[in-house]
Image (tube, each protein chain N blue to C red):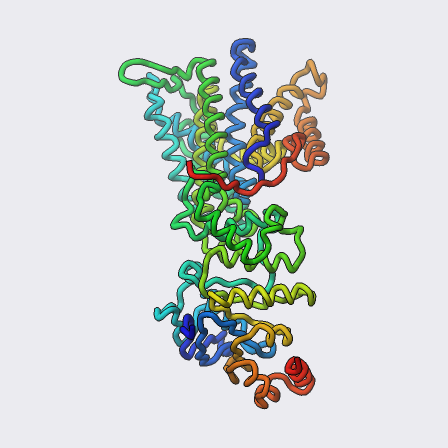
Length: 259
Length: 331
């Protein structure tokens, strides 16, 4: 089970003298939900951007399944199996849910410069769409226009689009952003179930959800890793409380600690 | 969004094509000429709809390809005999495709208003090239004395000098272009360009190299515009720099918008309505003294349609529900 899929070795990202991420070494394992937490400006999204190839690191290496993938662009990494979803919902609002997922699935064809055979006849593409729709539990909405489904369903659609490309690493940037309590519970269950055969890396602010979903936590502060470990360890850590959370948030942690 | 017409539209289209097929049997020469022009512009407008309504690229320089192909025919036609269609058409389309690839590589790097401006500017360069150089008569234009003839071996199969032959040839081209575009828009390529129209950033994030797809769409569209230009040059046997000008590009856009973008058949309706209306308002019989000021009437017509029909004339047909790619068994 404990197989490292994706890791960084001393990566840094420097924006004109400002280090958003500084000398970060972290390893993510298959079959686990890995959560990155930290205050605003800690470099969490930058780290995700480095892992997904949206940004190239200034320094250090990124290794995916034993191969150095440092500096590869996002579309290459996504073909290799690293998929990501965005903090802000980014879909095709006028298209149906099915067609949204279709476009994601179709991107796995060796080439889409195919002009004659109807897209609907590509069976593998269609099978991936169906699998992703049912994994993300959004299949009942397949025929609806994406703009007209609820926010929570749109987040599920994002996850379905991610799954349609059949990645083995899922990078989720605040998958619960803007969701009500009921919807949150559903997504948390979904993420837990995806962790069985994926490596899930996610950023989250909702502490209740974080402790409900995480197998392993990494705490970032000021671009560096402050501490990492299983939820119990992080919950008990004085350093984390002091440096990251401060007084008011101590209550949040304590609250989350008490079941 | 809907590429495959619903049954009502398909039946209507079949009837229209059937009606068009009998025009030469009933119409006199002038009517036949107008009908040929309608068909040619329907091909032109449809080619523009591929960019406008499906790829989300507003090209304001599409007439450059229309005109360039027309000029190419003038230039490849010998002065004292007819060019062979089998060689002339590929030559004209080849020139058009090369120009489109060149222009396309530059313009697909831009988006929005910059795309409009850069296509306009590059097309105007072609206009002024033919306007200000002695090639093909400069600003006066030039004649194509002998229309192309389809010759295989020693037998002449099709002579585009014949009004009816040209008409049927153009009609066949229209039907083929329509069918071709319907097929292409259902293919994986078609799905990609329609995704680009809605959310190009997301398409890139999904791993599509969107510039390549936009470029191919641009060249395909230009090729079809080139076919229309080739046919247009055969109608009057005359080419003038105006064919490449921005006014011609604008007329194409008006036709597409009038008919309804993103439907393909809307472009056909738009072209027919535009030219048909033009013929009516310019005729003293119908509009009396206003015939002299026919442009005002055209303007009113276009404004009324755009104001009251949200999806253009094609919107008059029931809007079928948006469909997802149907999953079918392997044939």
